[in-house]
Amino acid sequence: MTARILLLPGDGVGPEVVDAARRVLERASELWRLGLELESGLIGGAAMDMEGDPLPPSTVAACKAADAVLLGAVGGPRWSDPSSPVRPEQGLLRLRRDFDLFANLRPVRVFPSMVDRAPLRADLLSDVDILFVRELTGGIYFGARQEDDGSGEAHDTMTYRTSEVERIARVAFEAARRRRHRVTSVDKANVLASMRLWRRTIDRVAADYPEIGLEHVLVDACAMYLMQRPSGFDVVLAPNCFGDILSDEAATLAGSLGMLPSASIGHGNFGVYEPIHGSAPDIAGRGVANPTAAILSAALLLRHSLGRDDVARGIEEAVKASFASGLRTADVAGPNGRICSTDEFTGSVLDLLE
Ligand code: IPM
Ligand code: MG
Image 1 (cartoon, rainbow, N blue to C red):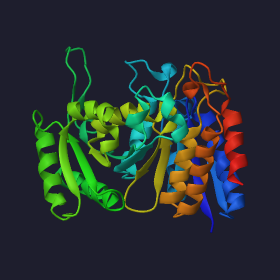
Image 2 (image 1 turned 45 degrees about the horizontal axis):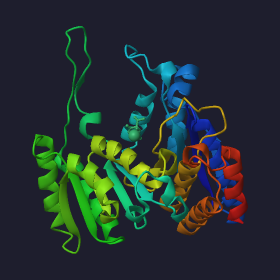
Image 3 (image 1 turned 90 degrees about the vertical axis):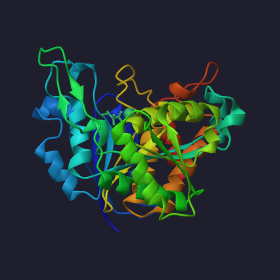
Image 4 (image 1 turned 60 degrees about the horizontal axis):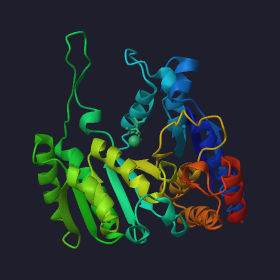
């Protein structure tokens, strides 16, 4: 087996956490003889600085030549001038859109040794096992947009087509089949027309999956239930924007935004894998970022794009065991915990892989 993986570190803590994941991929490649070939490319603010484009043609070409992409994070205060016509985030959004990566999978699990780190009571957390299925190439992120051109008005449009809702619904129902057979679909159908189309379409697709239990929950209520009864969820199916917001909320269950990985996939095996967290400019360059989300994203890459569930599990177990051994980066250390660096945590994962 050989496979080409493109690393797109991006901005802020991106390079640090992608470097951690690269070390894990290289070790896994040796141990399991995966023949991984790793290359790096530019995206986001880093690409704007070098090439004047947050997703330069060279990066698009490298993505096309790769079997999968591991991405760090994009954005930061240096490129955040609201009057600037180009932003780092546009690189990521174009990558998702141009490669038709319409399904974003965000698994949320709480490591047993971490239940005391979340702000919720431990008894609410023990059985949490949620898979967010976030629609990624439609909705308000990609609808018609008008910047304020001096008129004192701007707008973004939430648009969904039946075909877009259908295909993401099928991803969610298929995932539920392999899990606990429940789908919670999130919408705001009491107010928004696009969300009434969403709900009707989900109901129609659900008819093909009689063995799956379906509930519709309004997004505001869903935000509350995630804190009230997080273990009651199995698959949560959400439109682009709501999925973005709810998955950050759900990260508090796992102890920190630094814990959760994601997989952005489309029709084939190609995918883009990235932490759900952002570039965290406040802690960038200090070697203290939590590499867990990036390392677990590498595991998802091996599982979904390369079909190596066995290796993915090996990595996930090594991360779990590192937490069980008491190692904690600053974001999850708590008031009395000893704080380890990105490097120390990654070193532990590497040791435990063997
Ligand atoms: C995410 C991020 C992105 C999003 C940003 C960086 C554009 O928040 O992947 O969750 O909103 O999708
Ligand atoms: Mg987000």
